Image 1 (cartoon, rainbow, N blue to C red):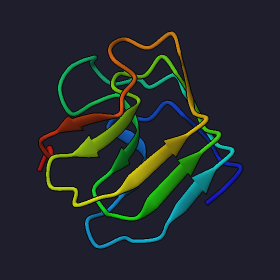
Image 2: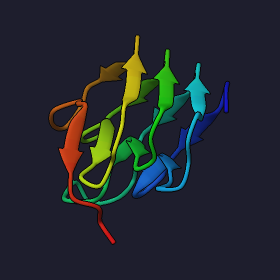
Image 3: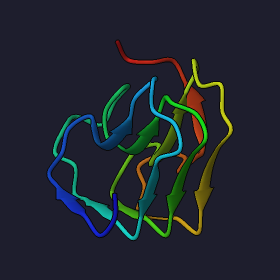
Length: 99
């Protein structure tokens, strides 16, 4: 996936699922989430799969912008990514899966 812009999302603009592997997300942006700023919301890029790459991506006003859920075997890579005006740590952060 590349060159996407997600605006006004709730949970995550991009989520790579548990069965996903060898996925690349690059040159993309997640802007202005609209959900309540609390657990399991405002994650710009959320990874649950393994062997995935998020490269040159940007998040604006996210919360835990670059997330790896607790069931992730990894490795996953966030390379040259940027969080602008984050509401919390920009990650990578390892958290429990919201489901």
